[in-house]
Image 1 (cartoon, rainbow, N blue to C red):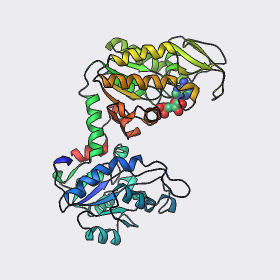
Image 2: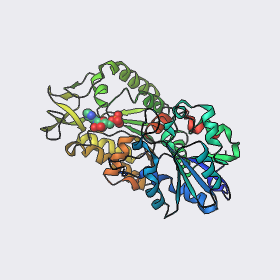
Image 3: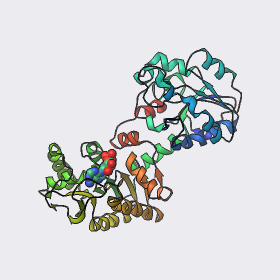
Image 4: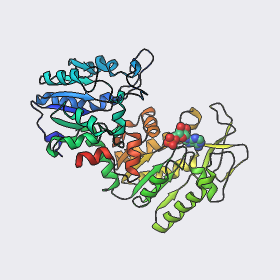
Length: 398
Ligand code: AMP
């Protein structure tokens, strides 16, 4: 593979897999353009070098061929604006004559957006012949879609084999994601704390197992903490609990003890008498929650204890909120943790926030620019931290 920043794109027709899977409202207006913005530096570098750009992406989950609401044509105008008024051509099919003709006629500095890849079933099937057809559109292949790097689809992985190693590479966004993830998984300065929260233990078992091999401390918060507290013999009232995961929780605690990894569970909780934004609230030790009440956020002692662990760490990974942060009454713990991560980062720690809800939280609380890296790829980052090899990364490396 080549290094993007060292490659000269002059006169190259660069085929870029981007993740333009943005939400649209019923008037087909983009309601959150972060995914588009994230890849603009990659596109600009190619155009500035004197190359042309052919963009391919999926949008939504079309079931059976083309559907108006999933057409990428709705993105043309905004993409042109994000590129400072650059003209964006559109091909209403991602392969076929019109796509080839338009790609063939592109001049340096011009951009072509292809229609939704998932209008073809072959995309998600990772069909080789389809990938080869796509590959004919460009002379260089750049993958800048970290959000789909965990999928072995035609445009994200299979296509790479049709380009020689020196003509395939990660874009700037993907490069940043891979570099930060590797920094945490393979080059972590100790102490290394992983903060894992969210609703379910079952979603986070593999990540916990992998982190047991690497982290110094693991903080467990959110709904999943109560399965661990119950496993230790605590009374958790109506808090979230996966009874079929109690044994797994015990095994994780046991492994951690053997490996000398310190697991931190919240000593106290903010409890509520129902799962509701207007519920009555109180505080309680996390292992003595009264019947009829449930833990919906970590308590003050937990906030303090967790913050102290975070502030003494040199590497920080955060995935999953500490409580039901969507409701104002239960967002305090998540906010305190976000602030502690920002403070540790200011003192020189490397911090990576990954996974849909913690990213939403760090943005909501205004700390996104105070951590080292905020990942754009929820599922992809999670799989990376589970220790899996992501097809989109492996294909480029070859
Ligand atoms: P996940 O997608 O697994 O990271 O879980 C995120 C979800 O977990 C968010 O929607 C939170 O509201 C929810 N959550 C966090 N803490 C709790 C809790 N103590 N009880 C119930 N749900 C929670």
